[in-house]
Image (tube, rainbow, N blue to C red; front, top):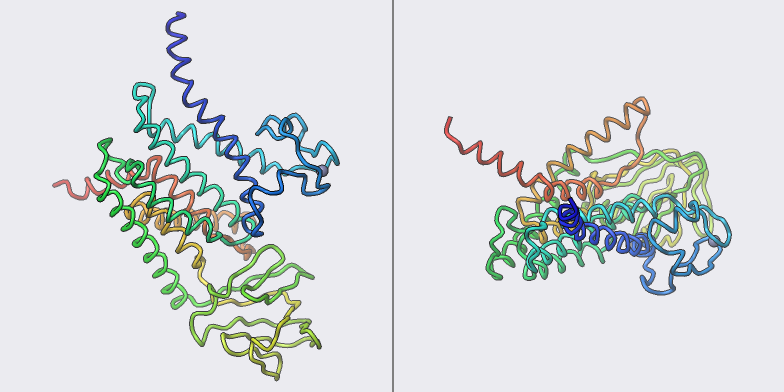
Length: 379
Ligand SMILES: [Zn+2]
């Protein structure tokens, strides 16, 4: 049926447009993921090969297709381009299409549906960026978390659909803004409480280092070869201490071998010597493991959950916290099984929160409602 075909073609037109647009946005998210943690400008310089610095012309910068065409290598120096680049583009495209299918439909091509889908796209783009930066660097930049809180509050005035997934009836602007603000506060406060109570209950974690890997005590963070741990996530109380046995310790003007090191907020002890931390501008150690008083989550996750609450409301933050803990446990147990119980590596928590928050929009919300309705139902 030709008529049928055209009807289907128009049905597919909007989601496909969202997909293509998502792939283009995903290409920009790759830039954000790479440059944001390094505090570089997102716009300048334009895309270039990280290996040979040669600029990438627009026709070789087409999302997905360029990577396939170049078989995953730089056109100039043939350096491999990580498969993560096209994967982020594809993921963003798919999620944007899903955002439209969740918020609008072919029968409902209204401005309100487009606005709701646009807000959801912004939210999902933030989740993707936070996830991949956290995987690489174990941090979620303030630009994303504080930016996300501001964007969430502002978005509640543009479209309130994400804050009231039950109904298509828009909320009054004041009540949408209030829900958004409440979500922000509840989300942040709840994760903050978990971080503090968790540290108090479980205290410390042991991290194993690769042979030859060095640990650098930088100005504001403990730096591993593959990422860093901000001091603000480590030192809350006088008694919080980072301890390790070093095969070698290097200060600016001297070095020690085979010695115990202990660092608190106010005291650095190396063997039998003791310093004030601010007197030691450079401290680098070689060690096999380090004990850090730290929860699985940190302050970055507190701010991240606050931003999620600003977009989705407080119920979503409760759901995301529970679902992320479940996901984290599942992945942890799986990794331990694969590595026969030897898995002691670090795992960022942000990606689990991000996946859980996305699950809320695409079904978790319905699950939540069903749960509470069945609780309330008389037996
Ligand atoms: Zn190159």
